[in-house]
Length: 256
Image (cartoon, rainbow, N blue to C red; front, top):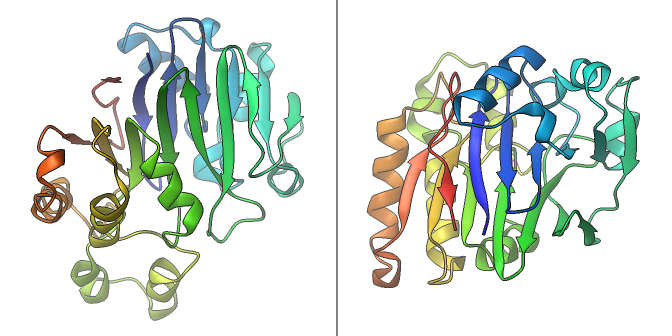
């Protein structure tokens, strides 16, 4: 069994809870320690039960709360060497993980797989508990083979669905920022996220959580409509539960 919940998702901060029968972890801590504690409590969890923190990359919306958590809690913090070197984090029990190398952690098997994003050494996470798997794929510019493989092996996928291309191109972002967002090391659009699942998911996939929605260039309604219209081509995924991750509150808890 695995359960997954987004505590925060978006450019203002990202944090995801993943739990099994035996352990609980967080992926990223891009909001304040107090908010993490409060949002965990609101879903019936406690920070004191978290056994590990796993960081995808060094951007502030993914590490803002790390130092404060490390000051209060004795929790191992896992990230790639490139992420640590470029993070300016100074407090904590840091554990270096190697990208694309699987390791065991408290009964889980965790694969930090390399992705394309404009960070030093970014990763996504494929987390296994026995035969059940969940992927956390956020801040990724393109659907490389690692991303596609992770989706194909998952029962739960938290997947970036950052922007609607029309809204982005017609919006107030500068030309340079628009090019960054749509670039190979930027962010996935609604269409790209849906096409990824359409092409790569197996019928075992039970839940997809659309995450990291842009406040300026997307809406929950547009993201869901785009995803559902495209994925409807897969009749073997008619059972799929699709939801969104929120910026300011926890999502539903997904269980597989």
